[in-house]
Image (cartoon, rainbow, N blue to C red; front, side):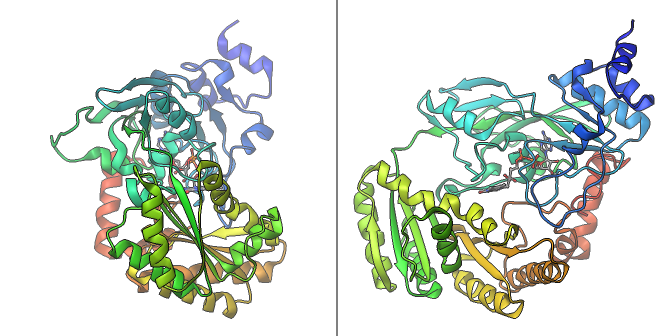
Length: 469
Ligand SMILES: Cc1cc2nc3c(=O)[nH]c(=O)nc-3n(C[C@H](O)[C@H](O)[C@H](O)COP(=O)(O)OP(=O)(O)OC[C@H]3O[C@@H](n4cnc5c(N)ncnc54)[C@H](O)[C@@H]3O)c2cc1C
């Protein structure tokens, strides 16, 4: 019996040229067609993002199999939606009707770690935290650390150009991607970039792919830069009686030439939500909590200097951790923020507006006004050192009127971000959630050029169509 026939016998395969074509280059277990199973691959974690029903989900394990998927898709003009762990927050990994969901999660091998070249070569399905742990064993460090690091994949991190808590010191994913192997829409394999410390040969196509949200090609291998592992960080928590005072402290810290390894802010709403969820005993009276960390050789001295700046900005209490365990405890509150805000009303819309740090205070004030205007709870968690805020709208998705207000408040926050000289997305990407806003941010000429780039790589518009534009 042929492989295709065997597969048809086995389960509910929707026979047809697509599945038949895929099975010519993929093993049966890598081609999922049961509608209950394929439906479970329809969404990432964003709210308010429509998703279609995939025709099929494929789970390749090799580059050749990915090439076969793309050749089949091109031949049959079927859209392809690449997926990592689907922790995305913009609908970028959402299925479109009749698409092939191309899940890269089975391509999860770390192929090389080189302490001399300070690089790692990985497949796209490697989970961020797994890579961090593996390079840590060699005394090395892969800095980009999205809060979802225990789930999200390197392919997804590259797709969204993701950031994280330590980016204030170490930068975002884009700064660590040296080279890529990419399967193009028609199945050809292209290598970009380098594994050397320097290199300027030709246009920087590597950087173009970072943040392209699966719209230009499928990343099947990445060469990532590593750093020596820094000393463990020490954390300080400072409590403020206003958001403005906390933002003033952020400005003083950055203007003072300090380089914290983390500088995070939680507003009153978020602190309360964390207390309600986890009973962490954070001061309920606080209007804003700032967390700063240093991973230098004398972190206690750095924390003392930054603590003094917080006090000068009006901090009501400054608590430096004495060791790694205390530091971790202080960070727990930050890590729980999004889960805690979700518990407020059952659903959240997480915005991702990034403004110049000097305008952070204005953004936080503005979000407060928007929350009053729309009668909604909106908690702000911010990578304050980057000016990257996550105003998180809490709402009841079962209530259409409240859902409408949530969407409107979300849009108004993006308008405010642009007004303050910022961007609609610092790290989560555009996906389907912010398509209209991308056009506003880029303007007509910028948008036309971006579409032209997309057309070069994907003339048939089969790669994650309907995302970004
Ligand atoms: C609790 C929580 C906390 C988060 N914290 C952060 C944070 O601190 N910082 C941050 O930046 N983000 C954060 N995120 C968002 C999300 O985790 C990141 O965007 C992450 O990079 C997505 O990775 P993923 O593997 O889940 O990718 P997916 O969601 O599956 O995909 C993301 C995008 O990349 C594309 N893609 C995936 N793999 C490939 C590939 N191999 N080739 C081409 N395109 C591909 C997809 O098509 C999609 O457009 C958070 C999400 C959650 C749920």
